[in-house]
Image (tube, rainbow, N blue to C red; front, side, top):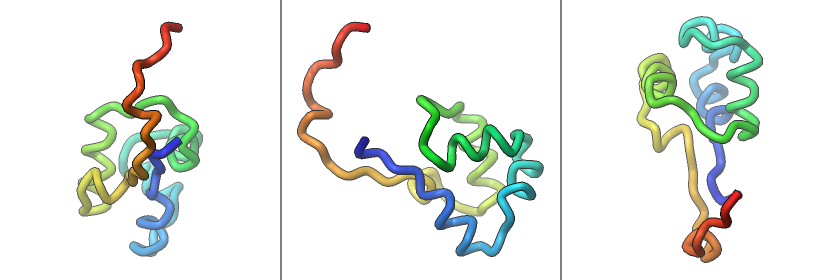
Length: 78
């Protein structure tokens, strides 16, 4: 997947512990871990806003995107 979560890099750069960030944002450590690993299909804007507030960053600091031409193809029906 071309969208990559870069939260771990930001946590390291800020010298934080993931468990402390999870507590501050109001997430379980499991929920934060799933987001950090990219194993979630989505994130609520409110959660994203809380992460940005706690880390003093912007949403683009938490996510990265590498262009993939396949992203422009119609989605398959599930």
